Image: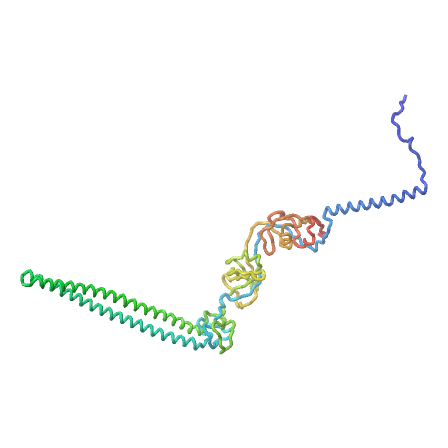
Length: 430
């Protein structure tokens, strides 16, 4: 016997509902908005998914991407400069006068050759006057020397006489002493002889002192006059040097540069006359950015390119002054220099600042200046993600990577300024 089921279904509660035309129209009105809402929600979900994966898209043609690689980073500076003579002095007029030029600009000259002559009557007259003064002082000094010799000779004569008188008085005393001992001479004569000896000794001592003082006094006076004459001799020598300098001579073998006065013109003292260029030694003057100037040092190796040839060189001077954000430096050829160099000729130079071996590096680009080079956009597939990094040494075309990147990764080195610091962006056409 089959037991009846205790669980009942809902078949007994179901009933067929007849759909009228008005009901069908109502259902259609509700179905259309619901379908649109579903489509909107699906679209929003796609947009949110796109944003989360770097939805903003940028054309790969508008950016530059470079790979991180390992190698030797050479920090160097490349710059164009002008050739200047290492030794190019300007000759000046030692005194006012009329100048007579012996050469013209561009003439080849030899060391010691007269290039120009200045006629200065005032300077020549002053020399003659000072020479006369020197002759007078020298004559007085010579006369003083002669007077000193005469005075010393006179004092010596008096000293010799005092010594003779003292010797004679001593002999008289001895003779009177022997006569008194034999009873032939009275005691009073002996006493008189003793007094004469004492007087002679006093005279001798005085003569010796006068001789010494006379010599010292005469020596001081002579020395004073000799010093006055020596002082005047120095004045004359200086004036003679100035007169000799009225003839402007070439300081070395070279070429006349710029002539700054006209023939037979009157010039003032210390006026520039002309310049002489030493054609044997040239240097290259360059301008380097202020940011690199602190790394420059005298003696750093460099290279100068002239045509297709490269010549070794070194930094010879660095200016301590910054002008318009640049610092002037000079580079000197180490061994040989190109033939036929001319002043103000343009050449290119390269200075090696530092070499770092086996470091991570990437091509240098504007990304280094954005936010201090603390971030970079790392490219993977068709996306670029913003990542913090730390950079090190910088050269003209590469930058050292210390942290944040691995070898083989690619980053956006140019054009990342248009990303507006977004965390992720899409790269189309990559």
